[in-house]
Length: 119
Image 1 (cartoon, rainbow, N blue to C red):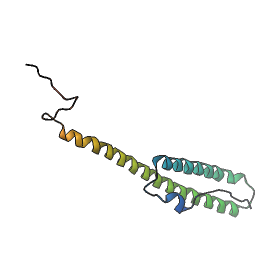
Image 2 (cartoon, one colour):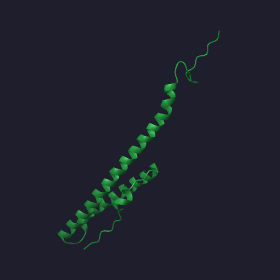
Image 3 (cartoon, rainbow, N blue to C red):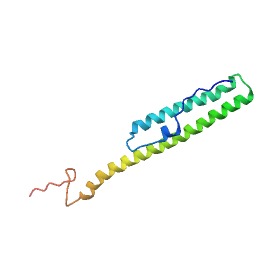
Image 4 (cartoon, rainbow, N blue to C red):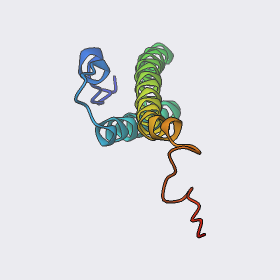
């Protein structure tokens, strides 16, 4: 029987998120999980070339497919988290500049919106 050696993080490790995680941390987790999925898919293709009975190969395929599904779920969660963080940053950026634009107008000109009248 051929042993499958893969290192996959447990569900709690990569799916846990705290408020202090940065975007680069999420990006590195996404790339790491993507690399793991690619390696597992390569192993899945190589199972047919390994020695062993058909039952053993079937069990190995099922194990690898289960690991891929778990990693894909973690990847989807991290991508949602990354999208939420990007949305929050965009809203914060618009919120800070949006409040200044509401107060600006004809009666309160800015440096860009100003008319000099000389009499």
